[in-house]
Length: 368
Image (cartoon, rainbow, N blue to C red; front, side, top):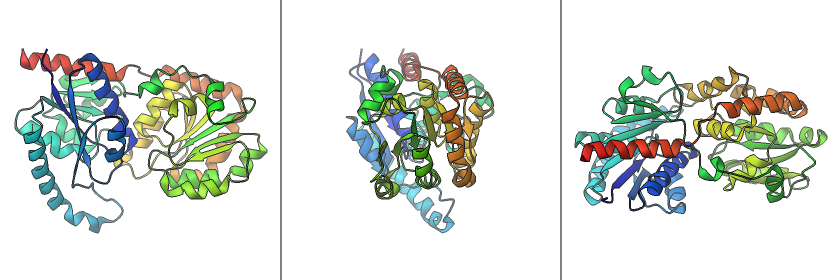
């Protein structure tokens, strides 16, 4: 069997990067000789996380549409033209057999160029409301992998494959017990624990609410594992300095321990966070990011809320409503366990391997 070459494009957040790495790992497990080149955006977190995982990456000079400072978008057409020139060189130096796009603005020029020269392209759409870039790319893609039903309103129905979202193997295959997780963070197994996640880049509303609620957590006998993102890391460290049972860091690399330790999770509602919470069967209070494209995080959260598998608090109400909701859920053992079980029932496992097998089978048809 010949060794194939894949380009995997996209990034910007952990919700795009970690699925990309999971897919690459699954393909390499099936075909160990496969070569990969990741393409991301310069200055974004993929430029650090992908090499940490052992893969090579090149960065494009491209940015996404800024919804808050519209004047910054004046340079977008020029950056897009430059990125296509860079992409052309990438394909010249790394003649790929196929391209996989996982979302993020760096995926557009890569997949569009691949489609223009007849290279098979595959898309993974993690959200329940597809992004505009993926909708455009999906028309000419070979297959589109989605997390849930009902995506035919965004993509050609014959190209859709429902696989779920690829969850990191360290999480999906975790055998960690609650005690293992609490020991890792130096916490007390006799107390309930809240895990607060603001996403890989941090979440201002969640962090501020948690910081204001530290006394309430202590009075309720709750412990805290707090991933803050870099912007809030110093403030959080100062806030918990003289408190017991509270652990904080800008980023948690060993998420399998954090999920194992948690009784209640606070989280944004990015597709990957939702998928991981479902796989781990955790009760969660979601605070959807209000500026996400097409408000897809709210759609992600409501998919769980509608079947009593999670709770959701609007971002604007996090300061007043988040901590009371968490305290109530932590106190109610029956509701918390039922919510976790319902979430676990929604989990689709082995998405990474399902995607890998489908991609390789499709390429066999092309080469056969």
